[in-house]
Structures are given as structure tokens and as C-alpha cells.
Image (cartoon, rainbow, N blue to C red):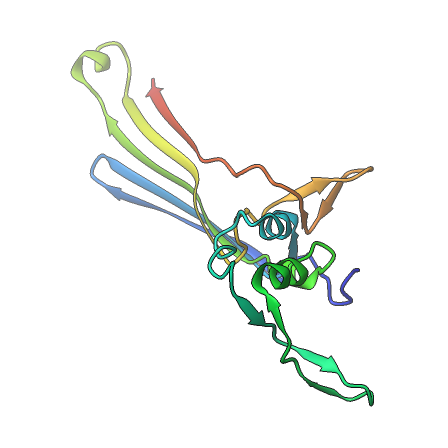
Amino acid sequence: MILSIWYYNHDWRGGIGSTFSYENLQLNVLFDVRKGGLLYSNTHATGIEGGSLEGTTRARNETVVGDGVVQNDDGTYSENTEEAAYVTWLRTYYDRPNVESNSFDATYVKLRELSLRYNFTPDWLTRAGVQNVGVSVTGRNLFLWTDVPHVDPETTISGGDGQIPGFEVQQIPSTRSFGMNVQLDF
């Protein structure tokens, strides 16, 4: 089933960065923002189905009355009052073909990069012609703020002819990276 309102493309995308300096220290910060779009998460669907996600065990031995309506014999509708085992309800509501219950707003904010640099020039290097030494540590993809559970919404899957945006299937967790840099200016 494909939703008629399905639209992966974002409403807008942007970033903001700044550099803060104090004496020999420099702090660089970069945020990326994506607003809008939809993402279907197969990780969410199969995690619920398998009972491995948070919340799937809270009422395992209880019954629930799901939201919604039921059709009456005369063709009208009334509020659902039928109880179902929690596990049965969970697996039915979040079943993989139920695209709507496994789709999320793909909006996110990421702390894309944070770096701290210290500049100095030791006397013994000045005599060797070095004007400045800069040592920095950098981290990338450090934090993610999103309503998409368990996955990074900046994701795609491989299709027969390429990438299919808006569909996530068992994504490998996003990685953070850290690095160190030494720069010599002559």
C-alpha cells in the first residue's frame, strides 16, 4: 500500500555554523537541519513484530481495546470496544504492510561537527621557520534529535536500479567519528 500523501522530500533543509575564538582557542560548531518529509521504517515494524523494541513487553499478558471504529451490520460505524491480547493488537497495528503506523516525520537536527583547536608557536619551532602550530580535535555526527525511533532518518535502501529515498530497511546504526589534526604553518 502506498499512501496518497506519501512524500519523502523535505520542505526545507539548512545548516548553521559558527566559530568562537578566545585567545589561542577556537571552537567550531555546525548543525544540519531537515524539516519535513516521511520515512517508512522497516526496523520499527520488525522490531515491534519480534517484541524486541521498548514498549513491546509492558502489557504482554494483558488485553487492550484498540483505537478506531468497527462497521456495524447496518453499514454504520461505532467505536471499537473489542478486546484483544496486547501482543495480537501490537503485531496487527504495526504489521509491516501497515505503512501508516510505521511511517514517521523525517525531520531532524544533527550536531554535524564540533571541533576545538589550539594555536601556539613554541620558540624552538619558530627558529625552524614554523609560524604557527595548530592542534585540533574534531567529532562528526555527534548528536541526533528526531522523532523517528531507533534509526537515523538520513537513510535510504538499495533498490534494483539505485536508492529508494524514504524507505529504511534494517539500517546499520549511524557512526560518530572522531579525529585529531596537527597543522604546521611555514
